[in-house]
Length: 282
Image (cartoon, rainbow, N blue to C red):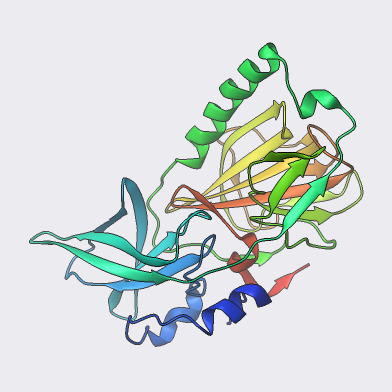
């Protein structure tokens, strides 16, 4: 099975020299190696037994494939072009391995928000946001060991998928953080399905994100679903592939009903399209 990247990423990769040698023939079981900001590194690492791999203080997933170990890491959107160092720690040695990061250009997105409090929150709303952000950060950092890194066999809702991940956002002319996910246009009430099995890491009705579900799929892969009209699961629930976890809505800071879908790998947001199989069900 092949895995797809957006055309912008594919174009960028054509000009990137990887210097990593050939990857295993069975690599199709994993996401594609897309070494750009907001992308994914899939890198062979050495060790008779499973090594520990880190980028800075971030733990990186290590999985077995075709007789060798692969590190599968999310690359932060703000990573500069050039070498990114992995620390590989085995039973007998600690070595460094560099990934060459290419460039990827992100567009600007200008949105008009009618409710001004979602652009300039007051002190109480900011305090609420900080508490909610900690809940989401804790869920995003959750870790369960797994033998693989899940790829997604379906899209959470059918609908037009935006390419807005990583875009520089302006609300009512004011700059804000880059967009951390994919927006999917869908009518309110549309069921939102889990794209892979997992455990509910958090739920809530948050100031900016509205009604929200976060799923832990293991090995540092976490997904987030925002602006729901209803949450149909609770923290700790075990979720199967395709199970309905909520309904599309327009809660929180939105311009209309849609699903915001974020994917985090090793603690950082990556382009969700990179985790979809080429034949993912719409």
